[in-house]
Length: 94
Length: 267
Image (tube, rainbow over all chains, first blue to last red; front, side, top):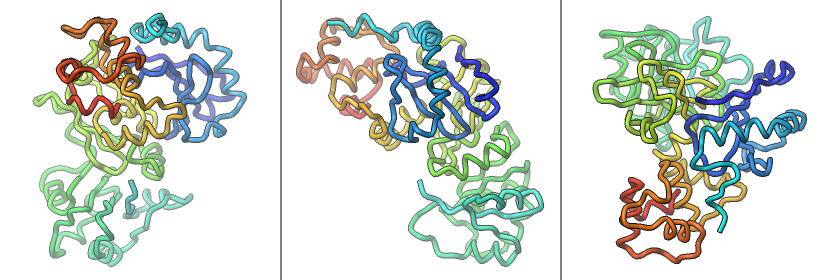
């Protein structure tokens, strides 16, 4: 089941969304920030943006901070949805 | 992909031309005929956007009738002879009706205006008889995805092909409660998109091992699920601790992942 993080009206009214899709490129674990036809992938391991474009500066810093404060929820959801590739993977350890 | 957008206006479509929609506006029959006869600049697709099929009737008596690089996005429903005629004139016709789902007008406008329109879907149709989903990008180029591809990793919830829609401004394909991103569909079905997506990544690891891991996770295959190859061997390859595998091993890995051996590195 895809997961949509409920956002405060301040962001949702401007059509911002944060999702973990049920079927997406899953390396590396991330949440997707969406606004209209744009999307940004943010790492659930480090909080860094994964792609050069669109520019990460187009996402309000306050929204990024708000999302990162909820990283535990997002990480738990990711791990439920992608158990073969959890956020912190045992598999990656030598 | 760069395209020429032509907007055939009526009262409703006139709103589209306001506010910087990047299309040339055609307001009269003469405008339509002139645009139709302009020589093709390279092989760039020309996308006609209209509300009603009847707006395009001035093109019906033009010679030659077919323009191979011309495509049509019609917002209103069309059927019967009218639709047949449009399919004689345009190489691709995307229009509501007969199971075709198209984005709402305000999302459609945004997608068509986006420079990365070829990375978004404007709509699509489910072909139940052949077990296919045909998705149309913002350039109207079709992408054909089998039911089997959506079902490949036995997802929960299961894709419900009777409930299909494209949402999130063309970024999401929804089949009932199941959702897939346009990104993952294009990443798997379009090697050129995959190359661009990898270039966009800030910390892209181009090694064979990293590509193998990405592909394995995309296919939802566990490391211990490669017949005749140990989990440890796959792990060593993914971590780059083992050099390129023996051709026979590589062939087995590729077969399990459903690609040609040379294709692994493109992921």
